[in-house]
Image (cartoon, rainbow, N blue to C red; front, side, top):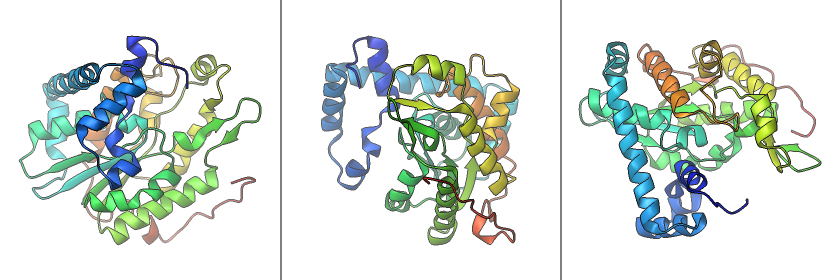
Amino acid sequence: MPPLTTVEERERFIRYTRMNRWPLIERFPVPEDLQTDLLASMTGSPPDFVRATIAAMTAAVQRDASELMADADFHAAVEAIPLSPGDRLIAIGDSVTADRRGWFELLKASIKLALPTGVEVVNLGLSGDTTADVLERLDVLENARPTWVLVMLGTNDTRYHGSTQAYRMVGLAETERNIRALMECVTGDLAADATLITPPPADQERISSFFQGAAVTWRADELDAVAALIRSLDSDCVDVSQSIRASALSGLLEADGVHPTVSGQRHIVRFVAKRLAHFRRSGIARLGDTAQRHQVPTEAGA
């Protein structure tokens, strides 16, 4: 990764980097000040810059949530989300979820404004995570003691590495296996409810331009295939992919063609809240209980 030379690059890095969610630090915590110092060193910034940037993003989320809650429909949707005192709503995902300006942070702030105390909302999103990475962090999820888990994964399964020979991180067959295993662990071992959310779509033209010459890239059509897989596994999933496509991609994705803009994240939280308000907290996405299971296809190299 090249050095971060501009304020915008440093802020972007901080926006998506949550060191407290790194597996080693989750399992062997270090003081927050040390995490700040390390993040400052990584970005070539003073620690005060890191603290100020995080504080500004946190304040922006609070403002955005207040604006969202001023809309009667959104307010009603958040109030209708089936959460009660003692519930622990956990999100697992990649940078789309880890985003300090992201949909789950907006949902967390909105829930705090609308619902009674005693509901805990925890963001376990980690930038770069694939479905395989999340399986490796199941002990972290278990330690969070969830009663309801929101799962938005798949973007990084379609990430490719290599300048001349590009290799996909996780093949589609393995993505299905991992999602099935994850959901069975959540609903079985952890006795929690679970909701699958499709990842946002990507814009191939922007991806090709932004990552030109880089040793990493994405393929938008393969991300669409992951969304289709999730729809096939659970017809009641929260289909963010289709929702964003119905609204057109313009203005909802960053220049990299992968990450949602702040406006895109606001769109996602509106849609997610509306869908969650209609869920019944019983047997949600218990894939292991379905009578008809999909045959996992064989896939070369997967």
